[in-house]
Length: 253
Length: 359
Image (cartoon, rainbow over all chains, first blue to last red; front, top):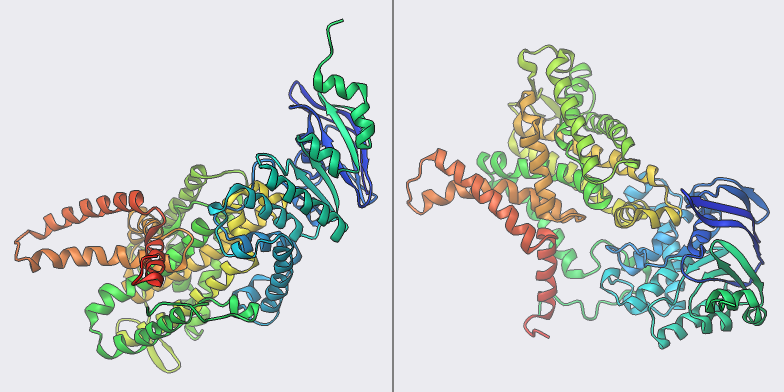
């Protein structure tokens, strides 16, 4: 459903991505891995329009785009979470998740100011959808808590909820397990698999925990120094010589 | 004991999303509104109206407008005085050109003109952020001050660009001008303030309010989930300026009644209104009015406080003491409770819920 073709991106003299091509198939879980600075986050930022690539094209659902505003990409059905949590800190869990549905709401501000008739019905209907996500992620008890007061693991979960609220077709997760303990990681893995299963969402994720990557992903793309060095099933990638070299280093002789 | 929500179950999202989900809050609010409608018109004297109620309502509305812009959408503005002036002078021009026009319509038009200027001033906000944006809004302040001083047409060629409140009726009752009774002005203002505040509350709890807060809290994430930054910021500028414009028009037409351009200077309007939302609470509708009440009542209190203690202080000294205490209090508030009076009220309610058991 997503086709990345010959993407190159550089910041000044630093070549972040070099001629990268890969595809994401409908309904799969794709992991993008690589050592620090390999260009994984840059790749996600290119996909959702935050960076404009120097060259190359991106096809999403068969439509190509050269340059697109992030807001438009989001409206087209791509949602994401961030490496460092990017929740709206002053708002409640419920409001954060409702904000994820903002693009689906349309009533103009006069109706909203009256909070009557169509605007009110719209608000209630979206509240019902938001509550489904709250139930799904098991965060009922914190729905009216300001998110800056929540512990880290829950904030990550709320952020996933906010991304899900947009009912995306493609979900980009930037290190969803970073900084979590084993139990939280297990929860998060279960949620990711459930999302894929339950909503049929295609997922592309960046992760450093190799155990997690090998367990949950259908396919793995490996980047190193802005180059793609491997692409295949977890077991293929694990056996790939380039990947082993990139992670463990190459001996001098 | 009295303030307990135990047993108040919500069985629908509509019930859960009402403005005051806790019944006691609801009763208290309506009791306050009935009190506000009945008691001052029956028992109030001119001192109460002129010195306390009128400025609190007008400046509270302006503070609400600034709070939408700064507290909810995170765009700092120092141009409040300019927008108040736009509202006031627009109101004056429209009502003197079309004396037959219903003054509620004129208020609406004055607000709309102010909103249009707000959008123009807001355009740089996409590129300019924080304190730098505050400086660009200063340009609005000085530009408007210059206009009302230099363009005589705006004040109908009156000497020193003064404008005054013309006598106007609403539903056959004289509500504006020097001969209008205070209670009539008061009730009309109360009505306007109530309706506009209700609309503001509805806006901030709906889609638009959430997109404002999203832009305030983390603009990049907001953009990546599909919120258009420019449209959102401009809507905050438009609606904030609309409120400030109407507040400014009321400030002149009901409270001051006769003003020259000096009344819209940055030190008499923009900064005090900014202090109101800082002391009252950024991102709180109640806070806008609490802040306005605090800033208006503080000097009144100080003026009456020293004579009460039988301490003979000359009035000009009191004025200096006022300034000193004022500055001190603002610093005190920013250190002790940066979230303002609205947060204090929140804390009181949380304590009350547990009272008399502290756990």
